[in-house]
Figure: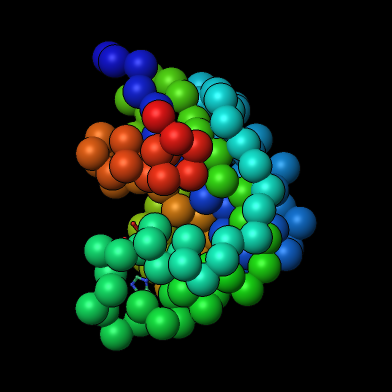
Length: 135
Ligand code: IDP
């Protein structure tokens, strides 16, 4: 299996709940290395640009509002099969549908405040890493 890099965000709800460490620990104990990491407050422009593919969706305004409601942790994770592995560790978008033992099942409260973001493909990972950390 190939060593990949993926992009991850610990969202404002999880930062506010003081579970950054617990979430990072899930990554590390499952073989993902943190190779970039920054706590930051997203501007409206940054959040809108990041989620541009969802611009036409009815929840876009709420999503941008939520993602700028407090600091987030942006990070790059590296490891074997990192993109799929991270998605598996995160669980389904809606925490009520997320499998037991996943980050969203354990730390998220709703579909909009769902604790983490993770790239869904190699193309997204490349774009998202460059968006926050450059090439
Ligand atoms: P993902 O984060 O699991 O990849 P996406 O479909 O890419 O899910 O959606 C991006 C983010 O938009 C989700 O994580 C969630 O915060 C928000 N979102 C998705 N669908 C809904 C919805 O139906 N209502 C409110 N927020 C949503």
